[in-house]
Every structure is written in structure tokens, then in C-alpha cells.
Figure 1 (cartoon, rainbow, N blue to C red):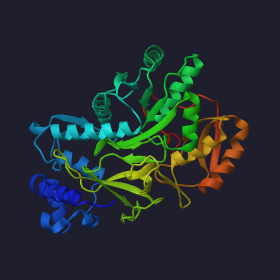
Figure 2 (cartoon, rainbow, N blue to C red; figure 1 turned 180 degrees about the vertical axis):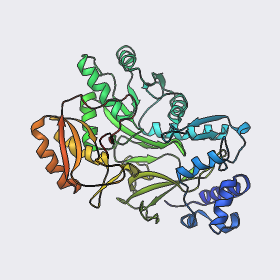
Figure 3 (cartoon, one colour; figure 1 turned 30 degrees about the vertical axis):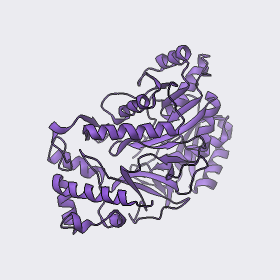
Figure 4 (cartoon, helix red, strand yellow; figure 1 turned 120 degrees about the vertical axis):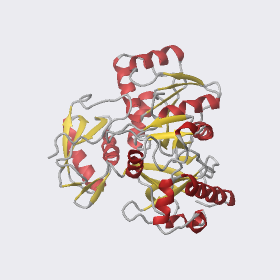
Length: 418
């Protein structure tokens, strides 16, 4: 990304604030050889600095509760405190000041406006407004001026009723839930015709061509993908009607890098480059993060989009922490699903990978459960070998037999792992 003078000034100010108010970063940067903020330099030199890992933040809060040594405010200065889902057993708290909340609201407004949402349009959402940052996106719809219909999670029947009676033009949910809604609506002969725009995020899927076609066919609507990361901002990227990648919507507040996920080396931002996205806050008050590793593996484009926007664009390939390695080949579960989707309509699009051992490294064949016609199992296995260069053990299962979710669906299941 090109660096403006304003971005550089914001970065230097943020670094100075970290040295002054965050014991975690003061110690971390000094240990890396940077005695003070002037030694860090400008944003063009950011690759010299150490990364911030999620586990470091958890350890920081465990050692210095409740907000951790990385926080730059006292808890009394927070206006809102979200938390992660706590997959490790302990949630990570994410504080925001009033200024931080307004920043998130504006980033969200940009994100969903990019999807084409306009004032007075009706949009039904399934985000929960509870402890998780997804609920922060709800303010974006108010900022746009939409007629917002929040349904929340776990209310599929209520959602179908809202679509029938209120005829919303747009739906916002996870891609796996959008597919589940369409399947349930078909079984109940419920019309989804009012919905013309489906906005999906929260998990990979919306950018997979096969999965997208499946959703668009089932709904008779156009799919737009968004992406955020709770530690950084509830929404960061939004797809325009050209459907050529998601546009960055946080310019001026957040700096993005692309790195090699294995070596950690910075990669050049150019059309078609792939790597892990790394984020740095430029104007965060409560808990600014420096070179935070997202574990999102993405393809980027720097050229202008046909819509006229010049912001950086990305398409998420998968999560590096979901990645498996089969005989030296990197395997993203979402990539497997994309290959399987080529066999529609003889498959539903639902898959589940069941590794035989815990951990990243797996021996072939890798078990892959696929919903659909048993007769296509051999062809699917051949296509996966050709496209993804690993040997699967494709197990065909009956349609609707794999788990569905009203939020995020898991593509990895270690229940058979040794």
C-alpha cells in the first residue's frame, strides 16, 4: 500500500502513545532494540518491528486483568467492552473508547455502502448484539439509513417469517447460514424472492465461486462478501457490485501488510499476490495493536476496480490456523469445498474434513465427507487430486446429514483423530 504523509504522521503518533500508555508494547519494542518512539521511525520501516500474536494478548490479560498490559487505557475510560468467543476456554476482552466506537461505525458504514446498501432499504440481520464484535456492525446500518430488521442468531423460523412479511431487500449473515436458510425455505415452500442482496461474512465461503453460485441460485439474489477481525475492527473489507474482491474500508485508521505466513517476511502488494494479512492500528485509543497477525490467507489486488474505487482489494483464501499439510501440500478446507462445489447439483455443497490425527501434518488419504450422489465420489476425489495436489478419501453421505449452523459452520472435525 502507498503511504501518505498523513498515514505516517498517525503511525508515529500511535507508536508514541504505545510507549507512553502500554506497558506491553513498551517492553516488547525495547526488547526488540527500539529504545523509544523515535527509534521506531515511520510506517515505511514497519517491517522491522515484531509481530503481535493472539496468544500474547491472552497472556497479557491473564497476567494483568482485566484488560491486560497491552491496553492503553484504564477500564474506567472504556465506553464498551466486547469479547472473543473464547475457543481456548478464556475469552479475550476488547475495550473501546467512544472515539473507537465512532471509528468502527464509520468503517462499517463504508463497508456496507460498498455492498450497495442504501438509505430506506430494508435489511434483515442475524448478528447477535451480545458480547461479540459482530454486534458492532449493527450501527453501520443505522449510519447508512437502512430500515434495519435485527433477528439475531438461533431464530430461523422467525427469520423466514420476517422475510415473508417484511420483504427485506437484503440479508446479512454467514455464508453457511445463508445456505441453510435457503434449504429450509425450499423444504417449506417459502418464497425468498424479496431478497435481492445477500451480504455474507464471518467465515470463508462467500468468495468461493462454486459456493457463491450455489447461494445465488438458491436465493435468486446477488452475493456480496465482507470481512473483519474482532481484534482490529468489526468490519474491514466490503465487496462492490463488480464482485472482484473486497475493498479495504479502513484507510486512514488501519495499516495493512502482506507477509509470507511461514517466514514472516513482508511481501510486495501487487495484483495476484497471496499471503497473510497483518494489521496495525493508526488511531486506536483503547487497545491499539501493532503488526497483528490475522491468520487470514488472502489474494490481493492493487489496481483500480471497474467500479472506480482505488482501494486495496482482497479475496480470502482461508485461515492459516485451519490449514492442514498433507505430504508437504498446504490444504485449506475452504479450497476443498470450492472444488466439491463444481459438482453441483449432484452435491449440496456441504463438506466436512475428518483428519485421522490431531495437528497440522496429515498422511494421505485425507477423509473428506461430501453430501450428495454417491455415484460422483470417485470423480470428486480425482478432481481434488488434480486441483489441490493431495489424495483424499471421499466419503459420500446423504444430503442434509452434515451439521448446519445459524452462525459459523466448522469444516474440520477431529472426532476421529488419534
